[in-house]
Image (cartoon, rainbow, N blue to C red):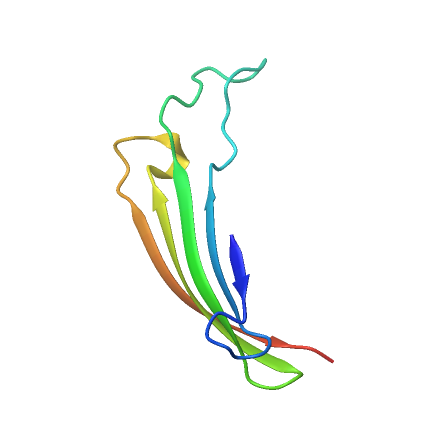
Length: 85
């Protein structure tokens, strides 16, 4: 889900992403299929500095990494800078 110009600033973008990472269920060389349910959540805001530079702070959450319910959740904060030439 993305919202362009959320606060009236031309070129900014607010986004929310939710997804399920790839999961092994069956196959020739798979001895134990993944039984847990991992989920990936991301929230970000792309701030357009000028026509060529944007800064995007974001926050990620991954529950049950590797589809293993005994694994601790992963929290990640990130700042991305994009240069367009």
